[in-house]
Image 1 (tube, rainbow, N blue to C red):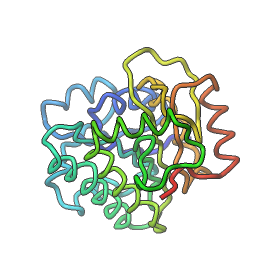
Image 2: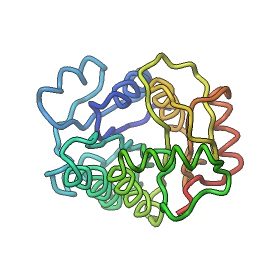
Image 3: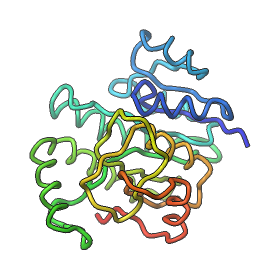
Image 4: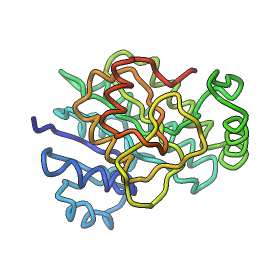
Length: 243
């Protein structure tokens, strides 16, 4: 069934790949930052909406979400602008979207949020991590600790919300290699990267999976077909967000 979909951060690499997968079957509105990005979105057969995640008020996003079935949050500062901009986009921008969804009149859209694997309380090491996982985690936190911190604060805010349904996808390190259609999904290890193509594919498959509501899904490179892996993970019903 065709859905009305809004993508926040619609000009990002994953978001554009996702848009291309969704537009043949769904109506997609892509929220972008600047008018210069409009034509890129139109070429993907989506409807561009210029709206600043950093500066526009919550009510503008509520208006944009009204009547939508699914909202994707795929925005991020991308490490640009230091901690101030990372906090403003990855945390405050995310919370703005959560608040905006709560303000939607009538049925509220499902939120599908793109986070990152290993986003957690740094003092809580998952029981399934091995020594290599811990080493990778420490290395990543030294390199992009500010990003991990504010993604964690955003996810921590989201998991407490009950006014709307949400799903979190937590991909590992992203590559631009062609997608292979397979992954390791759920309580996985940290060493393997994942193609942006495969992240976009997983996000597109989640559009019809309200049965995944309340779950955070770890997603790195692996051998399991993505549809099969999502089915197994969702049936198990055990979130990867450990707090």
